[in-house]
Amino acid sequence: MTDYEVAGEPGKGYLLDNQQAEAGERFTALAELFDPVTFRRLRALGIADGWNCWEIGAGGPSVPRWLAERVGEKGRVLATDLDTSWMPQVGAPYEVVQHDVGVDEAPEGSFDLVHARLVLVHVPQREAALRSMVRALRPGGWLLVEDADPALQPLACPDEYGPEQELANRIRRGFRALLAERGAQLAFGRTLPRLLRTAGLADVEADAYFPITSPAGSVLEAATVRQIRDRLVQGGLATAEEIEEHLANIGAGHLDTATAPLISAWGRKPPQ
Image (cartoon, rainbow, N blue to C red):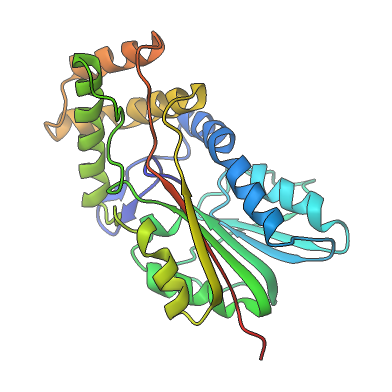
């Protein structure tokens, strides 16, 4: 997930529905934008043959598939999500299980690696989820949490030099308002190093990345706006005409569309 992804709160429903066709476009764009960052960090943590891995909020198949290739037949990859409809149901080299990390108990087993990307920012029970993730680690195992911080860089177009960019940023502000209404913590990413230390992990480090312009960023922006257009209009956050204009601007290649920063934080469970 990103600041573009599903945020839920009891009684308010989901902002983006993974059953919609645009969900596949989002997953593909997210993989292109952020998989290189995630894979570089996982390699640095030393992922190797035989590791037992838990991938949380997998959404699409790109990260669990990559993990399965690295851990080999002696290893195990468990991919969990609230909605597994975009995951292979049979024949994949990893397990797929429907699971709510904020509510459900951690899966059985002791993991060498637990990874969640763009998940906890949207989980109302995020502290309980983080504790569950830490408990699931074996002594010496690594937790890698990557999450968005839309408040740190809130603009769709950081270079706001004209009316097209101003419109993009106004629609992004509307989207952030919808996210906040559904319980997303928009300044969550920056808290990860502290939260990992508080959870008892050692060797905690973090870095950040956000693309300012790319074809995948434009695809992600357009797919997201198409999914939330009705809620933007109903909430008085944008008119239908403004949304169509924004989508046309994206399609014409007029916008350098940025995402919120992806903050990656990692730490190791101390040996017992």
